[in-house]
Image (cartoon, rainbow, N blue to C red; front, top):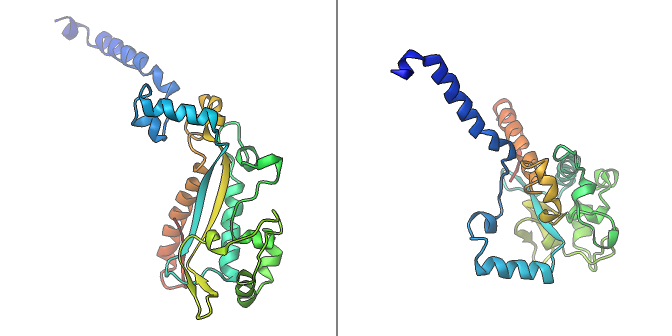
Amino acid sequence: RIVANNPWKVIIISLAISLSCMVGILELQSENRGEKNWVSQTSDPIKHKDWIDDVFPIPSRTSKLLLEKSDGSDLLTRDGLLKLFEVDQKVRAMLIGKPKFQWIDICYSPAGGLCIPASVLEIWSYDRSTIANLTDQQIKDTINSQGLVSPMTGQNITVERLVGGPVKRGQNGEILSASVLKVDYRLKKQDTFDEDRKSTPSELQSHSDLVCRLLLEKKKNNQIKKKNNNKKGDSIKYI
């Protein structure tokens, strides 16, 4: 009878109670770490992990970007390297979170050196003009040269580690083609940004957002372009 006689009051009170219970959404944080989601925080594995992290800290983590042609053809070409360069630059140009963290803020660099993603582009110092002036044969000759050394880090380069899939070789073992190229981004350990998550809970949970956000955008754009260019050349997909 009370509800029937005072419907608006009951509705307003119910809404007020519901809204007050939803205040906690303002503090909602997403979590994608398996040990946080699926393992009891008081269990022995977590205690062991905490001990290992404390005694043998890992200062960085790696996110990967894979570039692959839809028809599986060779990417060790001038056009393939230029496309990889283009995507890499877009990834590094992203601004993450409300504080607008830049690439230089989240990348990991040992001993305060340069933040250099690992990819075949490193062979040409990530210099677009140099890559644009290469021929496909010059690219093959370079990657098959003995004692390949990075001009940026001075370390030896193993090309197979810089491609994202199997390579096709000739009779003498030389690399003829690679259908997948990758970029490895070394990023500061996620826990470094634990305090920042309070202000940017949704974007700093995983630094792989750097890659994932771009890939989702590219996938959407590619779907639109595919409708308009079904019969025009090969498309490149990002996975």
